[in-house]
Image (cartoon, rainbow, N blue to C red; front, top):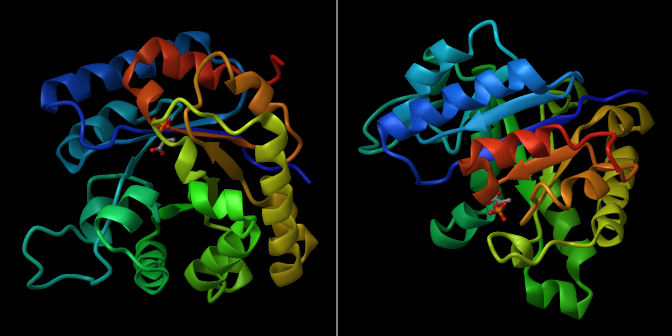
Length: 256
Ligand code: PEP
C-alpha cells in the first residue's frame, strides 16, 4: 500500500517576522521550480508567522503547521494558543510530543494524548514525535520506551482518527547534535514502530502510516535515510532554516 512521503521543517524559536516570511517565500519558489515528485512539504513555524505564510502557501505545494497547541478549546490560559486558533489562520499540521516540549516543558504522555484529541477535533494533523534518550538507547530499553510513548499518546484513537496522524521517530541523542542515527538504526526502529502499529490497528493502517525520521538530517545523509523501506521522509530542525539545504532534503527521495 502506498503512503505519503513528507519532509517537514521545524523552525523552533528562530527567525523574526520578516525573516520567516522571506524564508518561506524562498522555499515555496524553490519547491515550485525544482521539486518534481509528489512528496509533501510542510513548514512548522512560530505562531507569529502562521497567518502570513499560510496565505503565501495557497495554491502551492507547501503546507503550514504550528509547533504546539494547548489542549483546551479556549479560556483563561494566558500565553497559550488553541487548536481552533491555529486552524483559523489556515494551518493544517501541528507538531506534538517533540522531545524539547517533553524535556523542557514537562509535557507528559497523558497531556500529549489530550493535545492530540484537541488537534484532531479541529482538523489539524498531528506530527507526533517519539524518541529515546542516549541512556535509553545504551541500556537497550529503547523499544519499550518507544512502545509506551505510542500506546499512551496515541492508542486511544480509533483507526479513522489515527489515519490523520503522521509519526516522527526522533532519537533525542540525534537532535541538534550532528549525530545522525545510521540508516540501519533508523530503519530498525521504523520497522518496529510499523509492527507495533500493525498489532494494534492492523496491517492496512500500519502500511499506510507515514513515519518520518528526525535528528541531524541534512542534504548529505537524507537520500540514504529516505531510501530505507520504512522511512517515509524527515522532520528537519537546523537544516530547515536554510532554503537551499531544506529543498535539497525535499529532493532527496529516490536519489540514493
Ligand atoms: C528536530 O528538532 O525536530 C530536529 C530534527 O532537529 P535537527 O534536525 O536540528 O536535529
